[in-house]
Image (cartoon, rainbow, N blue to C red; front, top):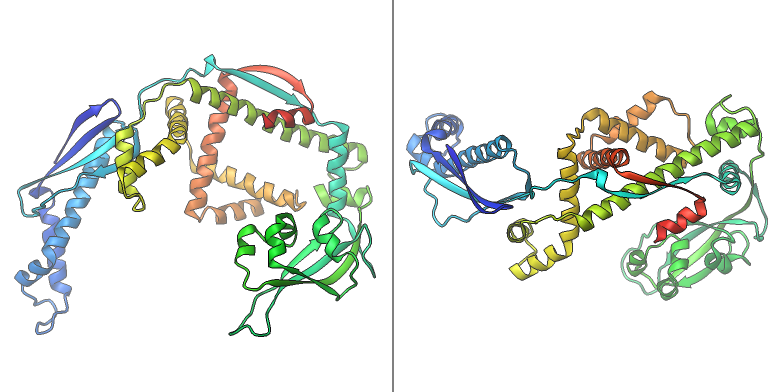
Length: 444
């Protein structure tokens, strides 16, 4: 077997794989003998079906399957041996006639290459902010801890400090046909969710009020407070919803004491309010700095995308889009889609170039560590900070059984390594800034 390349330009080519019948003939024969031994054909005992009959029925599909395997292996080996960086996937050139009995068969593929260019990270610079937590942010974070472990007290009526648990259910019209079994939603509203709170603030426990589908369509904020997205509102089967008060209660923030420290960070880790404030400040500073680092990296990547000349294999990408997406029915449609996605394709090529040029490797340990951090972050959202490492790893391993999760986390690991690379090599213009000022900077 042999693979030849005919370059269209520096970023696209036609690869032709030529295979001899000898490359796959023995495999076809072996597969046909297997069918002959196991085929169940009326009028013949098992294993006694004539080979001629087996060939008439199976030789063509078996040959096509084996040819496809040989061609794919040859193409992949050529790409590997020549260290080709493909954009998209090879697009097979249609064949009018395909004679699987021919002594030699050639199959061609259109391919697109990543362009050849270099990125000098040391030539790029951007502001690198140092963001320290202020007393305001520290106080807010501690108050959030107190709210998370607040004590709950039942109330007889709704007041300005009340939290109200509602059952939100669709009202089935009397003349509605068929069975209607719509599960109610549960929503908790308070003075902070102003629109919903206004509707129920005069109600007592077990009393209810109705809203219409039209109201939710017009007032998206109200719909959101009651647990409905815009699409869910459109999909409601009935024109009215009933909001019934299930519970009324107030929340009293947890006292700032040793019990709270232990609940948040584990027993004995924090022993005073002063230690708590130091711990919170260090966590906020670390979090703010991570965001500042990401901002710096994004600014550098923006500059690279703006300044770096990257020649895309546009003609190939149009063919690839048409081949890979059955919903694209014309060349014009493919060109329009490519035009809209050029920036994203260029960014992906640049990221790939940074990975290959700097020999960035991603292994299972990296992916596992990233998934463990994701688990810790998710648990922290619920106030859980001290789960044992073995429990964290158990959750992480379970997460990595999902191949889509592996793909997503691997992408995050790659971006994290690119981030470290840019932080190391690009020039930083150091600036101190408050968190409020940094938030304004992010909006620019």
